Length: 112
Length: 111
Picture 1 (tube, rainbow over the protein chains, first blue to last red):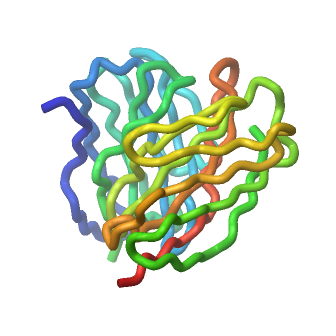
Picture 2: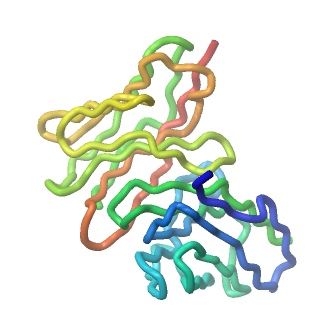
């Protein structure tokens, strides 16, 4: 089945540790995105990538880093510099950056 | 991208039509109206989008006013599974990219 996967679904980390969230898609989409969602709120864009080896900061990129070495993969690293990392993280992809986005199931990160 | 305004919550009886409004008075000529929904603790799901004509697919209908300053998403026969947060977004399909997901409308479908 074609789709977008995120793993793990739940992730726990100690404060001060970096953590990497996985996002993989087999839809052959060029564009990929990372969003953060806090309880009761909408989504905020962290980073996006329109093509392999290229990515751009979104609205809240501080404390996060990404890479796009393969078309299928867009991992997000939450660094220790991110002051409030506990949140629901959503990855999405689209055929081009102007097309509708398909979302993964999300990863709920809790920093203890 | 233009900003949208949606009511924070709405109720609908099961089997009835759910009409979700969205105001986007500052929409530009090249901006589309997109609707997504998010069921609790899942990723958002694309529903429908349009530019100026009304659109219909297997999930919903989208009605855009002639001046394009507002739109309505219609779920013709709401079921309990349609209980979700519905997001209205306006964005251009070219140029710089930012998708603004606001707080959306929380739709409660009641039996």
